[in-house]
Length: 340
Image (cartoon, rainbow, N blue to C red):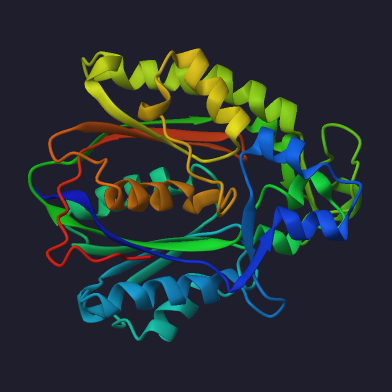
Protein backbone atom coordinates (compact mmCIF):
# COMPACT_ATOMS: atom_id res chain seq x y z
CA UNK A 1 0.00 0.00 0.00
CA UNK A 2 1.24 3.55 -0.71
CA UNK A 3 2.23 6.01 1.97
CA UNK A 4 2.05 9.78 2.31
CA UNK A 5 4.87 12.09 1.24
CA UNK A 6 5.27 15.85 1.57
CA UNK A 7 5.23 17.45 -1.86
CA UNK A 8 5.46 21.14 -2.76
CA UNK A 9 4.51 23.79 -0.21
CA UNK A 10 3.16 27.25 -0.99
CA UNK A 11 2.98 30.01 1.61
CA UNK A 12 0.90 33.17 1.63
CA UNK A 13 1.15 36.18 3.94
CA UNK A 14 -1.23 39.14 4.10
CA UNK A 15 -0.07 42.40 2.52
CA UNK A 16 0.12 44.37 5.76
CA UNK A 17 3.58 44.16 7.33
CA UNK A 18 3.91 45.27 10.95
CA UNK A 19 7.49 45.94 12.08
CA UNK A 20 8.84 46.42 15.58
CA UNK A 21 9.97 49.90 14.57
CA UNK A 22 6.39 50.82 13.69
CA UNK A 23 5.11 49.40 16.97
CA UNK A 24 7.67 51.43 18.91
CA UNK A 25 6.46 54.58 17.23
CA UNK A 26 2.87 53.70 18.14
CA UNK A 27 3.78 52.72 21.71
CA UNK A 28 6.95 54.59 22.79
CA UNK A 29 6.85 52.90 26.19
CA UNK A 30 7.36 49.45 24.72
CA UNK A 31 10.97 48.24 24.81
CA UNK A 32 10.95 46.47 21.46
CA UNK A 33 14.67 45.65 21.58
CA UNK A 34 14.16 43.69 24.79
CA UNK A 35 11.02 42.04 23.45
CA UNK A 36 12.75 41.05 20.20
CA UNK A 37 15.68 39.59 22.13
CA UNK A 38 13.26 37.22 23.89
CA UNK A 39 10.89 36.43 21.06
CA UNK A 40 13.33 36.59 18.14
CA UNK A 41 10.60 38.37 16.15
CA UNK A 42 11.24 41.62 14.31
CA UNK A 43 8.09 41.82 12.19
CA UNK A 44 4.89 39.98 11.41
CA UNK A 45 2.12 40.03 8.80
CA UNK A 46 -1.41 41.04 9.83
CA UNK A 47 -4.63 40.22 7.96
CA UNK A 48 -6.81 43.12 6.84
CA UNK A 49 -10.04 43.82 8.72
CA UNK A 50 -12.17 42.04 6.10
CA UNK A 51 -9.59 39.29 5.36
CA UNK A 52 -10.08 35.87 6.93
CA UNK A 53 -7.95 32.78 7.35
CA UNK A 54 -9.81 31.13 4.47
CA UNK A 55 -8.85 34.04 2.20
CA UNK A 56 -5.20 33.42 3.03
CA UNK A 57 -5.73 29.68 2.52
CA UNK A 58 -7.23 30.13 -0.93
CA UNK A 59 -4.36 32.41 -1.96
CA UNK A 60 -1.78 29.84 -0.81
CA UNK A 61 -3.56 27.06 -2.72
CA UNK A 62 -3.73 29.14 -5.90
CA UNK A 63 0.05 29.50 -5.71
CA UNK A 64 0.34 25.71 -5.69
CA UNK A 65 -1.92 25.41 -8.71
CA UNK A 66 0.10 28.06 -10.55
CA UNK A 67 3.16 25.79 -10.12
CA UNK A 68 1.54 22.94 -12.01
CA UNK A 69 -0.44 21.09 -9.35
CA UNK A 70 -3.73 20.18 -11.03
CA UNK A 71 -6.77 21.05 -8.95
CA UNK A 72 -8.72 18.18 -10.57
CA UNK A 73 -6.23 15.74 -9.02
CA UNK A 74 -7.07 16.71 -5.41
CA UNK A 75 -9.33 14.12 -3.80
CA UNK A 76 -9.27 15.34 -0.19
CA UNK A 77 -8.89 18.69 1.56
CA UNK A 78 -7.78 18.92 5.20
CA UNK A 79 -8.12 22.40 6.69
CA UNK A 80 -6.49 23.21 10.03
CA UNK A 81 -7.55 26.48 11.65
CA UNK A 82 -8.68 28.00 14.94
CA UNK A 83 -10.10 31.06 13.20
CA UNK A 84 -12.84 29.62 10.95
CA UNK A 85 -15.11 31.87 8.92
CA UNK A 86 -18.23 30.58 10.70
CA UNK A 87 -19.21 28.09 13.44
CA UNK A 88 -20.93 26.35 10.53
CA UNK A 89 -20.74 25.54 7.64
CA UNK A 90 -17.38 23.82 7.54
CA UNK A 91 -14.84 26.26 6.13
CA UNK A 92 -13.21 23.45 4.14
CA UNK A 93 -16.42 23.15 2.11
CA UNK A 94 -16.28 26.86 1.31
CA UNK A 95 -12.64 26.54 0.26
CA UNK A 96 -13.45 23.55 -1.99
CA UNK A 97 -16.02 25.65 -3.83
CA UNK A 98 -13.80 28.73 -4.11
CA UNK A 99 -10.92 26.67 -5.49
CA UNK A 100 -13.12 24.80 -7.97
CA UNK A 101 -12.04 21.40 -6.65
CA UNK A 102 -14.05 18.40 -7.90
CA UNK A 103 -17.21 17.62 -5.95
CA UNK A 104 -16.02 14.08 -5.27
CA UNK A 105 -13.30 15.67 -3.11
CA UNK A 106 -13.62 15.12 0.63
CA UNK A 107 -13.19 18.14 2.90
CA UNK A 108 -13.03 18.64 6.64
CA UNK A 109 -11.83 21.17 9.19
CA UNK A 110 -9.90 20.28 12.29
CA UNK A 111 -9.36 22.67 15.18
CA UNK A 112 -5.75 22.44 16.30
CA UNK A 113 -3.08 25.09 16.67
CA UNK A 114 0.65 24.63 16.83
CA UNK A 115 0.54 20.81 16.64
CA UNK A 116 -1.90 20.91 13.72
CA UNK A 117 0.49 20.34 10.82
CA UNK A 118 1.84 17.07 12.25
CA UNK A 119 -1.68 15.92 13.12
CA UNK A 120 -2.69 16.77 9.56
CA UNK A 121 0.14 14.67 8.16
CA UNK A 122 -1.05 11.74 10.26
CA UNK A 123 -4.61 12.13 8.96
CA UNK A 124 -3.28 12.32 5.40
CA UNK A 125 -1.12 9.22 5.93
CA UNK A 126 -4.17 7.30 7.14
CA UNK A 127 -6.28 8.38 4.17
CA UNK A 128 -3.56 7.51 1.66
CA UNK A 129 -2.43 4.23 3.24
CA UNK A 130 -6.04 3.02 3.48
CA UNK A 131 -6.60 3.79 -0.19
CA UNK A 132 -9.26 6.44 0.45
CA UNK A 133 -7.23 9.25 -1.17
CA UNK A 134 -4.08 9.76 -3.21
CA UNK A 135 -3.59 13.55 -3.40
CA UNK A 136 -4.46 15.63 -0.35
CA UNK A 137 -4.39 19.38 0.08
CA UNK A 138 -3.29 19.98 3.68
CA UNK A 139 -3.95 23.64 4.51
CA UNK A 140 -2.91 25.41 7.70
CA UNK A 141 -4.15 28.96 8.11
CA UNK A 142 -4.57 31.32 11.06
CA UNK A 143 -5.49 34.91 11.78
CA UNK A 144 -4.85 35.08 15.53
CA UNK A 145 -4.63 38.86 15.10
CA UNK A 146 -8.45 38.88 15.07
CA UNK A 147 -8.33 37.87 18.74
CA UNK A 148 -5.65 40.36 19.85
CA UNK A 149 -6.30 43.87 21.15
CA UNK A 150 -3.95 46.45 19.56
CA UNK A 151 -2.69 47.50 23.02
CA UNK A 152 -1.69 43.94 24.00
CA UNK A 153 2.10 44.07 24.17
CA UNK A 154 2.53 40.41 25.07
CA UNK A 155 0.59 38.95 22.12
CA UNK A 156 0.79 41.58 19.41
CA UNK A 157 4.58 41.27 19.28
CA UNK A 158 4.47 37.47 18.81
CA UNK A 159 1.68 36.25 16.53
CA UNK A 160 1.55 36.76 12.77
CA UNK A 161 -1.07 35.69 10.24
CA UNK A 162 -0.27 33.28 7.41
CA UNK A 163 -1.40 30.26 5.43
CA UNK A 164 0.50 27.29 4.02
CA UNK A 165 -0.80 24.84 1.42
CA UNK A 166 1.01 21.50 1.37
CA UNK A 167 0.44 18.82 -1.23
CA UNK A 168 0.52 15.40 0.46
CA UNK A 169 0.51 12.58 -2.06
CA UNK A 170 0.93 8.85 -2.35
CA UNK A 171 4.48 7.65 -2.85
CA UNK A 172 6.90 4.84 -2.16
CA UNK A 173 9.01 4.22 -0.18
CA UNK A 174 7.61 5.43 3.12
CA UNK A 175 8.88 8.91 3.96
CA UNK A 176 6.73 9.94 6.97
CA UNK A 177 6.56 7.56 9.91
CA UNK A 178 6.93 7.14 13.65
CA UNK A 179 4.01 9.34 14.67
CA UNK A 180 3.50 9.96 18.36
CA UNK A 181 0.97 12.26 20.00
CA UNK A 182 0.20 13.82 23.33
CA UNK A 183 -2.78 15.54 24.92
CA UNK A 184 -3.17 17.16 28.32
CA UNK A 185 -6.39 19.12 28.56
CA UNK A 186 -5.49 20.34 32.04
CA UNK A 187 -3.46 23.01 30.24
CA UNK A 188 -6.42 24.32 28.25
CA UNK A 189 -6.61 27.41 30.48
CA UNK A 190 -3.14 28.63 29.45
CA UNK A 191 -3.99 29.58 25.86
CA UNK A 192 -7.60 30.19 24.99
CA UNK A 193 -10.38 32.27 23.48
CA UNK A 194 -13.30 31.59 25.80
CA UNK A 195 -16.07 33.38 23.91
CA UNK A 196 -17.75 32.73 20.57
CA UNK A 197 -18.72 29.10 21.15
CA UNK A 198 -21.83 27.45 22.55
CA UNK A 199 -20.65 27.49 26.17
CA UNK A 200 -22.47 30.31 28.04
CA UNK A 201 -20.19 32.99 29.53
CA UNK A 202 -21.00 32.11 33.13
CA UNK A 203 -19.77 28.53 32.53
CA UNK A 204 -16.84 29.37 30.24
CA UNK A 205 -13.29 28.24 30.84
CA UNK A 206 -11.36 30.79 32.85
CA UNK A 207 -7.76 31.95 32.23
CA UNK A 208 -5.27 30.33 34.57
CA UNK A 209 -4.16 33.69 35.97
CA UNK A 210 -5.44 37.25 35.92
CA UNK A 211 -5.77 38.71 32.43
CA UNK A 212 -3.40 41.64 31.98
CA UNK A 213 -4.68 42.71 28.56
CA UNK A 214 -8.14 43.19 26.98
CA UNK A 215 -7.52 40.71 24.12
CA UNK A 216 -10.01 37.92 23.51
CA UNK A 217 -6.96 35.65 23.28
CA UNK A 218 -5.30 34.82 26.60
CA UNK A 219 -1.84 33.31 26.92
CA UNK A 220 0.08 32.22 29.99
CA UNK A 221 3.59 32.25 28.54
CA UNK A 222 5.54 30.85 31.54
CA UNK A 223 3.20 27.86 31.88
CA UNK A 224 3.47 27.14 28.15
CA UNK A 225 7.27 27.23 28.34
CA UNK A 226 7.26 24.87 31.34
CA UNK A 227 4.94 22.48 29.54
CA UNK A 228 7.07 22.56 26.40
CA UNK A 229 10.49 22.01 27.97
CA UNK A 230 9.11 19.07 29.96
CA UNK A 231 6.95 17.37 27.31
CA UNK A 232 8.87 17.85 24.06
CA UNK A 233 12.27 16.37 25.01
CA UNK A 234 10.37 13.35 26.33
CA UNK A 235 8.40 13.10 23.07
CA UNK A 236 11.63 13.24 21.07
CA UNK A 237 13.18 10.45 23.13
CA UNK A 238 10.04 8.32 22.81
CA UNK A 239 10.07 8.65 19.01
CA UNK A 240 13.76 7.80 18.85
CA UNK A 241 13.39 4.80 21.14
CA UNK A 242 10.35 3.45 19.31
CA UNK A 243 12.25 3.61 16.01
CA UNK A 244 15.59 2.33 17.37
CA UNK A 245 17.44 5.55 16.59
CA UNK A 246 19.99 7.63 18.42
CA UNK A 247 19.67 11.41 18.59
CA UNK A 248 22.70 11.73 16.31
CA UNK A 249 20.73 10.00 13.54
CA UNK A 250 18.43 13.03 13.23
CA UNK A 251 19.71 15.66 10.82
CA UNK A 252 17.19 18.44 11.55
CA UNK A 253 14.74 18.89 14.41
CA UNK A 254 12.05 21.03 12.74
CA UNK A 255 10.04 22.41 15.62
CA UNK A 256 7.03 24.67 15.88
CA UNK A 257 8.40 28.21 15.78
CA UNK A 258 6.90 29.61 18.99
CA UNK A 259 9.49 32.11 20.22
CA UNK A 260 13.27 32.25 20.24
CA UNK A 261 13.37 31.88 24.02
CA UNK A 262 11.31 28.68 23.94
CA UNK A 263 13.32 27.13 21.11
CA UNK A 264 16.64 28.02 22.72
CA UNK A 265 15.47 26.33 25.92
CA UNK A 266 14.68 23.22 23.88
CA UNK A 267 18.13 23.35 22.26
CA UNK A 268 19.67 23.51 25.71
CA UNK A 269 17.48 20.85 27.31
CA UNK A 270 17.95 18.45 24.39
CA UNK A 271 21.65 19.29 23.95
CA UNK A 272 21.13 19.86 20.24
CA UNK A 273 23.34 22.17 18.20
CA UNK A 274 21.54 25.34 16.99
CA UNK A 275 22.08 24.43 13.35
CA UNK A 276 20.17 21.17 13.90
CA UNK A 277 17.22 22.91 15.58
CA UNK A 278 16.77 25.99 13.38
CA UNK A 279 14.97 29.17 14.43
CA UNK A 280 13.28 30.95 11.53
CA UNK A 281 10.61 33.36 12.75
CA UNK A 282 12.23 36.82 12.78
CA UNK A 283 10.44 38.06 9.67
CA UNK A 284 6.98 36.52 10.16
CA UNK A 285 6.42 35.75 13.85
CA UNK A 286 4.61 32.78 15.33
CA UNK A 287 2.14 31.72 12.62
CA UNK A 288 0.66 28.91 14.75
CA UNK A 289 -0.15 25.83 12.61
CA UNK A 290 1.80 27.16 9.61
CA UNK A 291 5.21 27.47 11.27
CA UNK A 292 6.41 23.96 10.39
CA UNK A 293 5.46 24.02 6.67
CA UNK A 294 6.99 27.50 6.40
CA UNK A 295 10.14 26.14 8.05
CA UNK A 296 10.27 23.11 5.73
CA UNK A 297 9.92 25.37 2.71
CA UNK A 298 12.75 27.61 3.91
CA UNK A 299 15.04 24.69 4.71
CA UNK A 300 14.43 23.39 1.19
CA UNK A 301 15.17 26.77 -0.34
CA UNK A 302 18.38 27.04 1.67
CA UNK A 303 19.49 23.56 0.57
CA UNK A 304 19.53 22.32 4.15
CA UNK A 305 17.22 19.31 3.68
CA UNK A 306 19.37 16.42 2.49
CA UNK A 307 17.79 13.71 0.35
CA UNK A 308 18.77 10.73 2.52
CA UNK A 309 18.62 12.49 5.89
CA UNK A 310 16.16 11.59 8.62
CA UNK A 311 14.49 14.63 10.16
CA UNK A 312 11.98 15.05 12.97
CA UNK A 313 8.89 17.26 12.83
CA UNK A 314 7.48 18.40 16.19
CA UNK A 315 4.46 20.60 16.94
CA UNK A 316 3.25 21.67 20.38
CA UNK A 317 1.03 24.20 22.08
CA UNK A 318 -2.60 25.12 22.63
CA UNK A 319 -4.68 22.35 24.14
CA UNK A 320 -2.22 21.26 25.47
CA UNK A 321 -1.49 19.22 22.37
CA UNK A 322 1.74 17.89 20.91
CA UNK A 323 2.82 15.59 18.09
CA UNK A 324 5.95 14.43 16.34
CA UNK A 325 7.08 12.20 13.50
CA UNK A 326 10.08 11.27 11.39
CA UNK A 327 10.44 12.52 7.82
CA UNK A 328 12.65 12.05 4.78
CA UNK A 329 12.21 14.51 1.94
CA UNK A 330 11.57 12.61 -1.29
CA UNK A 331 10.17 15.63 -3.14
CA UNK A 332 12.29 17.19 -5.87
CA UNK A 333 11.00 20.30 -7.60
CA UNK A 334 11.89 19.75 -11.28
CA UNK A 335 11.90 23.47 -11.96
CA UNK A 336 13.62 24.38 -8.67
CA UNK A 337 11.01 27.09 -8.22
CA UNK A 338 10.55 29.26 -5.18
CA UNK A 339 7.08 28.46 -3.89
CA UNK A 340 6.76 31.44 -1.56
